[in-house]
Image (tube, rainbow over all chains, first blue to last red):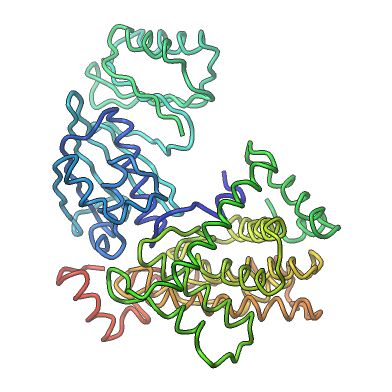
Length: 218
Length: 289
């Protein structure tokens, strides 16, 4: 997983790969999972994020990500001013709250149609993991192509989805199903070796029980 | 796992032959050698821009804790460290100041230690009028050293203290410097080891937990140690402890360092009276680090 470009890189806005670059990546990942422009955002910072965000610009980086900026975009510096023109946001810091990782952010986002609650952690060197989507545990690092599927927890859904993915000649590398209780709804994350075609995405979305599909391409 | 021994066996040649062997070895990417070189050329340009911006910068960072020292050093009448040494230190400070000021830099290997490698390489590059092709090759040599350290020890201050960040950066820069002067791969690995040995045990004790004090100035220190180590290795000085064992040692020292000295702002400089005052001013009263 590590190569020379991970050592000499990433190109990023300082000062911290974990507290700035990683925070920007998490913001942008959330925007991609929401799949539309942000209308309102609640940003909850925990642990070290909550304690040091002023000096590290963690809040600016998250806002920049929500505006679609990459971690090397110099507009991150003024992302709070730029975000104000685009959406409303609240920043909440919870330094005392117990979290499993010191660099944790929870984002509650609303778009015109969709909404998303996402938890992400920044694990160092700009690398991040999305650990929760809409209260379902997931593990998404944004480094491989992945499908995030919201569906009902009922027999046959997985079989239909995987059969269709195979029809597109796409290989599945890893798959995870997360549910809160039996028979309710689930969030599936399917790691795939290459992206699914737009037409196949529509067919996947049409599978009975599926309510939402997001493809994240690194 | 990559080791200095393996690196040495692989790269018996020098110059581009050596670099091509290194690229072949690090095959954990789908990118071709040309693609890697193209990306690193972009990184080299970002490194140059950061140095220019940092030297021109007169304002301080958002916290008011850094800024202006790069130009102070560069225009000073005192040049105790000679042309290359003075420039390397100034360029390292410039990059670290840009980083603290939320400017664009290349993590090498981290953002907190991003000044060391460009400081050393760009100063030597100017003095010897090196081409970008050679400097990109030098970045590959530096990257290989960083890879070895990351696989066998760590590059994170939170895990290994500042020896993992500025220490690794100095090792990478020392090896890269030996490379551009035409040194053998054996000299490259010893330069890296000598740099690490001189920074073993360095605490990571950032004031208020921010990548600024003392990080900016430790980038200058890392650049100086890198040049020292390169000069020793090029002169034929060798580490008595083999380079691979030096890495084992710094991994152990990193584990043994108390948590107070691993980016927690609990000990060292971060725990001084002045640091606590700065912390209060910047972060407000609430603090439970």
